[in-house]
Image (tube, rainbow, N blue to C red; front, top):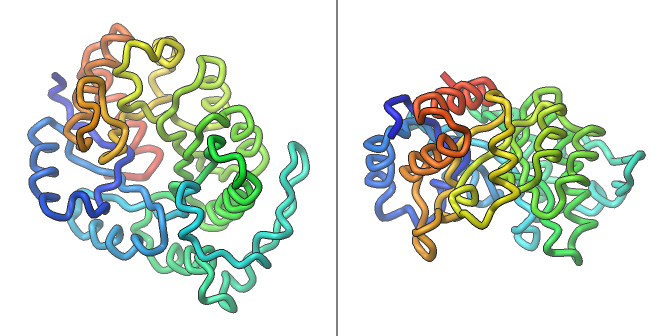
Length: 286
């Protein structure tokens, strides 16, 4: 077990499943050595509660529009319809006046909220989930728009990337913000990991790495440079091996740390220190 201070670089502590015992969940995390929490946004309706968590002093908010909640987002097609999905050329409309004319549009509201809340440490969770092929064109246009906002607000991005590593890497090369970002819940190959690292993105390691069957991911973890990863829980999701069917918690980042250390042939303290340094650098944490 690590004695170093750990950071949960990606969780959803704002979700209702934590409403009855959030303080106890955080207390268990601190007992396990996890003392800071980067909380990722999913939908506009949750941003207020997420921002309220920042007043605790140990939670750091990200705001974004998650691709899995596409049906919940209010999106103005005039903002989205000029996005062109292509490998080399991507065209998109600028949000007019930071969206001032489109008060009901979630992208416009995201732009306004980012402008008003300097405590936001990243834009996200945004990205692509290729399991849902019917919605991919709209996912890409929404992702492009959020990459543009991250550029405009000088923020890193937190990227949801499922079965789309190569396509997302190409898009980030085209449109990614200068501050890079986090590839949340990375599950790709060593070659894909290197490509993201070259683009300035760190890889989120969580519950998936604890499963022995995740052989490709485990091989990638052994080859990562020390600067290229962070530890995350994705609470309440992404349960660890042995905890399937249970609500995940930030405290289990300590177990992820142990597995990563074992795979890399390093001490838990070394992995925890590297991960925390990388999270602080990426998100500007104290």
